[in-house]
Structure formats: structure tokens, C-alpha cells
Image (cartoon, rainbow, N blue to C red):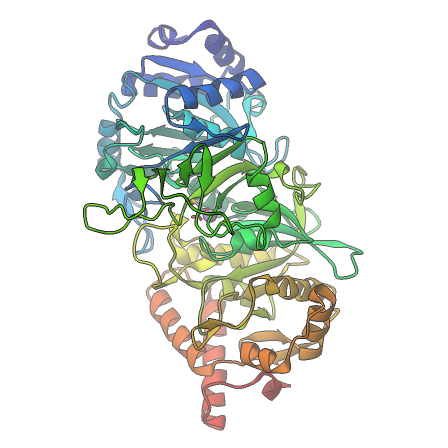
Length: 622
Ligand code: SPV
Ligand code: MN
């Protein structure tokens, strides 16, 4: 036991460290304890008393407050710390490495120097918590160890809810240093217990060392190491080992006749229907955010949710649209609300249904009253649009019984979808795996509030993973193509779009996605025919009519079908142009990407010349 550390830890912590028996772990803790200078270091086990210790600490330090319902607490992030900070999140670049131009980087030596300085003394007067987790189910070939060090009991509390405990996993690691390390400090806190120096917020990713440094923030997308910070390290690792680390949900779709359950993954940029796809009524949820995908020995695709909880957007969770989540949020269980309005121990959020919203309370701004403005004269809403809830998955009635399966779940389909008001049809099928990669690579979305910045701008977001890429984009896409080559039965791939508009109005209702996914599920078993179009395979009207009838007992009109499934030639051609520009300077692009793009382009252009029309009904292709 290093002497400097020995003075700061109690006998239980000492024992916990000795049992782990890993020099690299001890070195890290000692190094960061010396650098951050906490008054105390606590090394936590995975026992229930240790979980309780963190819950209590989050309350006693004021980072969380108890609410009326048992087990519910609230946490506020600062006014400048309510979403992921893309600008201040950078990969530390070793001298010979080259990344795509849209990946944020800083020279490794320079970045390390800057961030280590920010960590210096950052935990003075605070307690440093050390915790061991496992990404993915334990005892599985997917399992990855994660060591989290933080001065924020809120961060550890979130991780205790969102991730599997990994103390045992670390014991089995023996002397190995093959795990990820996350070091976080909320930095100096203000009178509301929120990070004060958000101008010095930095999140630096060290690919060489498998380590992420995060300082002067609390918002979970920035602070919780195992979430988007681990995703970046995993993408780097996966890319070198030919598996996939993806920003994907996993759901079990029950077939129409209920005779089978088929697992799909799905990638959607933040706040674009991802959680609601994972939570479609009647189906099961395995995960709503991050999945690892591997090819098994039989040539099939298997995936695990690396999390076991949800850090979900709370806006619009109401008894009609999300009955299961709403029920979970309004009954006793361990639950952290963040950035909602609190009045008299009760949380209020945007779009919560018929509740009357009080005129005052506490929110992410501090003491709030209706009409309150910020220093720029902007009215402060009672709750933030990126307000969230943190909850265990097994609190939900629809959790999949196999969600902890160490072998992963057999994946037969993949969905990609973005917020797209004018181009893509509600659902189409890729003709093969490569075309599926093309669909994922060309994913675009109109921006939302999950990221700091303007709302409503069209952004390109390959596989919804662009924010987290730490390998060149072309190489990442080549890895996707190669992943397909390893499979005997690759999953079928689907493009979905829940946001298609006509004259400013959505062309379908929120729940219609249930029909689209059931059609995809049936297609996996060749139950429906398709119409072949230049953009892929689309459904036939009678099949959707039957599905709408069986699922919702509702008439699906042919006019709606024609409106939704018409091929918007001009819009697709515009999209292709944007894609040409985006990828033109990208190195190591798979050749097949350009082949597919050029083929689509020439087919669509020809149709345009032949017909003189910018939009063709699905029946045209029959
Ligand atoms: C997302 O924005 O994609 C999320 C929430 O899942 S965050 O933790 O901020 O990444
Ligand atoms: Mn996400």
C-alpha cells in the first residue's frame, strides 16, 4: 500500500484494494489521489452497504435531494452544463495518428498537460470515490472492466443504477491492465452544488492509455465515464479487433402472431425516437443506448446492452404516449430526476400530460418562478428539454427476460433513423449488408436539445455515432463492411423515419412505428413481398393495411400510403449531393459505398429525366 494513499483510506477501503490485487489499479488511484488531493479516498466494493453509502453521500453533499416518493431524488446540472459539450470533448492525438477533420482532437502531450493541470487540487476538501464496474453482462466475452474515479457521488450513484457492478470482474482480471479508466472531477461547486467553472470544462480521451479525463462538469453525458466516454474507447478497441461498439438500442420484437421474438438493434441520433423504439408497447427492451456487437462462432451477429439502466429524456413522457415509463416514474423505486422543476417534493417536466404546472419551484436555474428571465433576457422554462430520469431497466415491466444473457442476443435486424422532415420513407429495407452500411453511413438528423447548440439544423450523423468516433470515419465504415463479411447470416437492415412531414404536419402518428417494425420483423422471415426501388425495398400497401388493422384496428388509407412511401427523387438527389461532399475527402472509405451511391444517383437521375417528376408514387415501381 503506497504511503500517501494509506493515510487517506480506512481499513475497509484498504481491504477492498488488497482483494482486487492489481498493481495498475493501485497505481491509478495513488496517482490521481496525489494529483487531485482529496481529503479522503473511499474504495467501494459492490455490496449493498456500499451502494447505500453513495446514495447517502449524494444527499449529504447536496448533489441530490430527496423527493416525496420513496427512492426518488433530484439532481441539477448547472445552467451551462445541461447537455453534452462537443466542443470541449477531444481525443488526445498521438503524433502519428490521423483522424477525420470533423473529429475534435488535441495534441496528446499538450492536452494531457492542460487537463492534468485542471485536475490539480480539484478534489480539495472532497471525498474521492473509487468504483469498479463491468460494461456488458458479467462473465461474458463482451465484458469490459471499467474503473471509475470521481469526486461526485451523483456520478457514482448514476453508474450504480446504469451499469453492472464489476468488483468481481476486477478480481478475475488478476494483474491485467486491460480495463478502461475514467477520472472525473466536478471541480469547484457553487451554492447550488453545481460545477462553477464550466468555462474550464474539458473531456479528453486518451486512446493509447484507455483512459478518459473529465473535469468541471456534472451532466451525465459529460461526466459519467461508462456512458459516452467509454463508448469512444470501445469504438477504438472494436475497430482494432473487428467488432462493433455502437450507439444502438436493442429490442425484442414479438411477431404479429406472437409465435417468436426477434431481436433488432437500432441507431438513432439523440432525441430522435430511440428510447421509444426500444419501448414500443407489446415488445421488450434490452437496451436503449449503447450496444456491443460481435460475430459468434456460427457466423451470426450477437449483441449486448453494455448498460443495465436508462438515462432517458423525460420530456413528453406521459400516461398516453409512454405508459410504462410514466408508471415507473410515479411510483416508489430508486430513481434520479435531473433538470426538472421541483415544487413541494414533486417533479414536473415538459409534456408530462394533464398535470397543472406550479408557478414556482426549484429548477436547473436555481429558484424559479414563471416569467423568470436569464441575463440575456431569455425566459427560462420550468424544466429543461434535455431533463432526464435515471432508472434501472429491470424496473420496467417490459424488460426482456434475456437482457443479461452473457452470450448476447441473436440480432436479425438493424434499424437506422433520424429526424428527417422531407426525404426518407417511413421504412425501407436494404438490399444487402453493404447497402445497410450505406444507409447507416448516410444517416442525417435535424438537431435537438441533447447537444449544446442551435436546434433544427440538418446534421450528418453516420450510424448516430459521429459524436463518438475516435477513428477515421472511412476506417469505421470499412470496419462495418468487414464485420458483414464475417457473418453467414447478416442482419437485415432498415431505414426508418418517424418524422416525415407534409405541409408542416407529421404524416404519421407516433405509435405507427409499431407497424413499421412489425413489417421489418416479418420480412426477416420472408413473410411479405416488397417493391424494389432505387433507394431499397419498400412495403406493399395491402401488407401495411393488414398490419394497421391487426395492430390498431385502424383503417390505413391508400392515400396515406402514397404520401408516405412516394420516392422523393429530388430530395434523395439533394441528399446524395450532401453525402458526396461529406465523404469526398474521407480516406479509407469502402469502395462499395461509392458504388452504391453512384448507382442510386444514376437510377434516380434517369427516373427524373424519364418522368419529368420530382416525386413518384410507390405503385410506379411495382
Ligand atoms: C445521448 O445524447 O445520446 C444520450 C444522452 O444518450 S448522453 O448521456 O448525454 O449522451
Ligand atoms: Mn445516446
